[in-house]
Amino acid sequence: MSVQPAAGFAPVDADFERRTRASFARQGAMAHLGAELVTVQPGLVEIAAAFRPELSQQHGFFHAGIVATIADSAGGYAAYTLFPEDAGVLTVEFKVNLMAPADGERIVAAGRVIRSGRTITVTQFDVHVEKAGRRTHCATGLQTIMRMVGRSGVQG
Image (cartoon, rainbow, N blue to C red):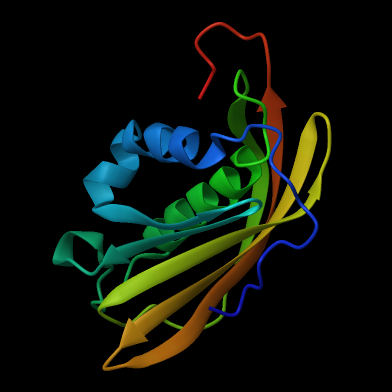
């Protein structure tokens, strides 16, 4: 993957991986897309999804909305790995640059924390599409994440 591990970040919750995987398992959208959590490290998360016709646009590529949705979750969960146990995660904004058609058998989105703050975290994500053993960098972007603490119903 082109996204390097997030250097210098240490989780405040030693159980961050279990907590991140449990939160991901509750995401109906990721389950609906058939996405799987591949890598969970402090400040770094990778999510992958296999191609299905239901995830395509009119030319048979992964739809840009699917690419963006999985990238959003990868960046958000990368931030979440550094949050305390009682915190929730919400995306404030993100920008996606689509650089090549997502024409392939599988997409892999890697989110990496750039800066982790008390309330706001900035992440970067890169998405690759795999086809016939070859990987193509098809999207990249930046994201702003808000750590939510003390909000009823917004935890985990």
